[in-house]
Length: 166
Image (cartoon, rainbow, N blue to C red; front, side, top):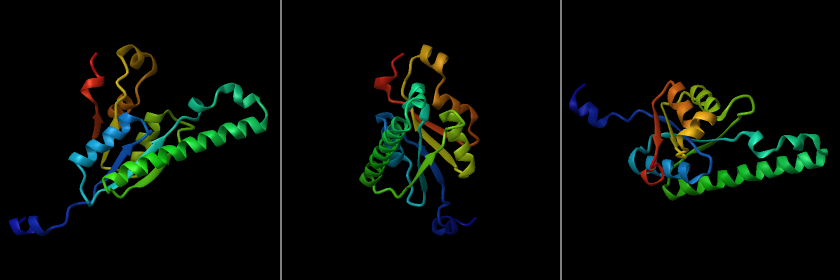
């Protein structure tokens, strides 16, 4: 390719999936992307994946339909709040994005995110790390570990030194 072609040819559009759960770790990962990696041509997918079982105790399903409905409504309100947080952070950096709600009813969050990345043909996955200790990761597993080891595309896990001592 001639040097003049490289200067005038448009950048390839990259599809970037940023896993967002509304936590400070996820927001810091997005901010790192915005400050260090973002291109105007990027197709940014802000993906939210919440396990319903984390929000509804198993005893809730034994209660009245009104109780279950109230708990489901509370869960939906929580998701709307997270989406508003995501929109606000993206607006701060003037980054166009698409909100994607990933259904994790049949998969754990890490598996659901990898599946969504495959379905959306993403080029890159970015997520924050909560910095759980070794024992907790061993017993419970880690969403970021799962994505790192099972993704078919590059993965960036943003860690913050002040929270990852051990």
